[in-house]
Length: 251
Picture 1 (spheres, rainbow, N blue to C red):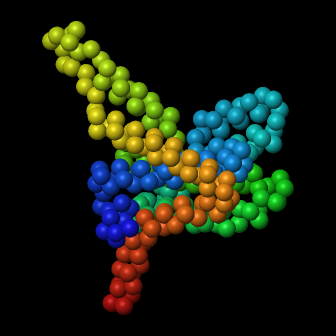
Picture 2: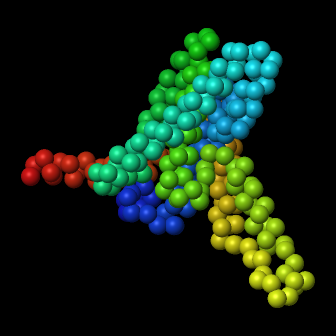
């Protein structure tokens, strides 16, 4: 990956194109982690709508252990989002190049740990599933908050409900019959936004297929390529900051 390109994707200076490209990569990663995680623990962790709905069902059916697992996932997602906000604000106050790279470094390290230790931890009865659900939920919250902040809430990557809704809205605008209402401003679709939304949804789906196939064939090690991809994206701004810190200490 070219250094300048990686610096643009996760560095402090932002552009609409960089936001879109990073969003596509993160949608792929989220889809892969979500699908692979489902094969590991039989539960999706990228969207809290299903988690909260399942919590309500478990509570009504007096399945308190499953309810607590869902509650832990919800708190972990919130904690991940909060962690992302803390890291971004910390970097912004210090004018670091790695303003949006630090959460990706944390996400990569967590995926590396899960990939390296997942097989061993899977034999710990009673703890592996809740801990894995909480870990993946934390990662999803971390990532979703990051892309939300850097794109000013224009891009989401960890769930496609909002994406599909916006796709439907744009298609509705595109299909609207303006000719029957003369004198009124026409209803116009935004083809650029529609294309981005479709690309994000496709990347999430392709990531899901890749994650499921990866887990099927190589197990927990399937998270390692995802972690290395994130490190490749986030490494350049982080190295820039370390180099600047080294120069300051020498001076």
